[in-house]
Length: 212
Ligand SMILES: Cc1cc2nc3c(=O)[nH]c(=O)nc-3n(C[C@H](O)[C@H](O)[C@H](O)COP(=O)(O)O)c2cc1C
Image 1 (cartoon, protein in one colour):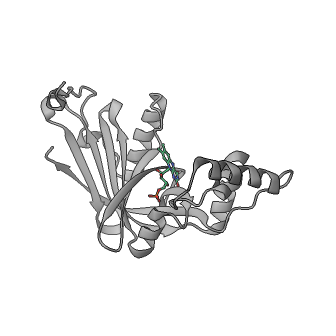
Image 2 (tube, helix red, strand yellow):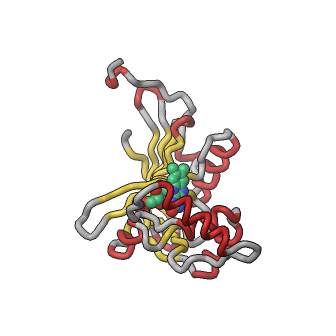
Image 3 (cartoon, rainbow, N blue to C red):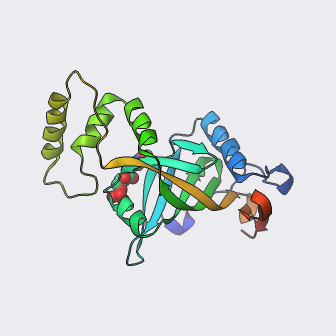
């Protein structure tokens, strides 16, 4: 099979200017709800791109855990590779690949750290084993063997048996304040619909159709 023969038509309907909400966050919320209603697995997964001090981009998937007036939120280890990148360059981009719906949403943004209290509230809402795993893993650091992780997890189970698990100091949340959103809807004959939202006067957004 040749990769060049791998293609399909996108027949999920059109995206029109009249059908778009004036607020990109509301438009995003609509599409996210539709993705969830359609039963898409990992509909809240977004591919986060960061850039390091040398200008090298890298990407990884994280889960969207909040969306409000401030922006899009996720949680992670503050000593991870992505956190190191963010410390030197707060400009990032995320992509929601809702491929089975013939859709993608990409967002460019500036990141800030969420208040510790918010990270703690979310940390304590997670299943206990996920909280222990956060203690057991020094995210993005080399690990000699799987057994090391399992032993560390077992040690944490013992340490915190029968009591509340505190949030590790190197764990927290980030908020992405969007500077640009793009909504992409696959169309027939590769004539896809693309709309970009950029900031305009007084908190409003300018919407521009882009060629596919
Ligand atoms: C579906 C999915 C969801 C994930 N969600 C998160 C997340 O919310 N937070 C996180 O730190 N890592 C998450 N990961 C793991 C990251 O992709 C990544 O491996 C990890 O954060 C380390 O990235 P880094 O070394 O680039 O910092 C997820 C991975 C997948 C495949």
